[in-house]
Image (cartoon, rainbow, N blue to C red; front, side, top):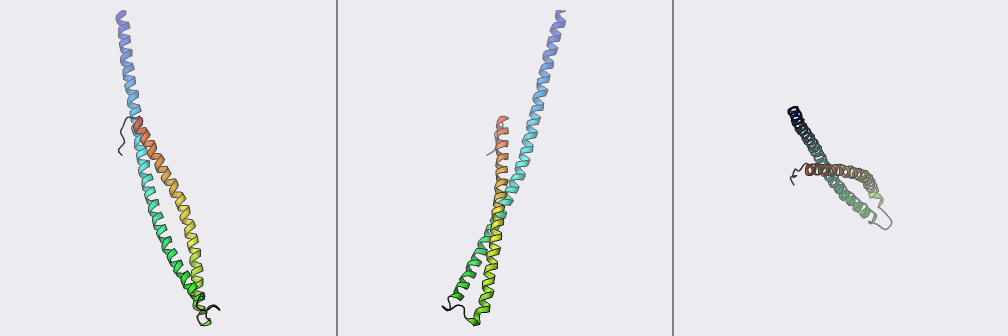
Length: 151
């Protein structure tokens, strides 16, 4: 009978060890799956953030060029208005009016582009913050798993 008790205890101990090993293996696999999921999400977020920043740079450059064009048009309008203290000479009024309309139209275009750029900046900020949050989550998970993150 004592042999049966010892055998039962030994079997229970072996079963416990096996169960703990299986639980640990499952936990490792879950951690590995979560790390891979975060890495994939981080890659996608990095690509999105990069595209967003590139688009912002292009839009900013375009807006700067348009600003230079508007300044040039404004200078030309001012030069027409400065020709004579009585106003724009009648013989050049049509040319002045066309230039003045171009200037006003350009200012409207600039205002619209500037609003869109601000909206895009807000959207990009959210994309970059999402990327940073994913980075923090991945680093925390790696540290918890005892894995050193590549810097």
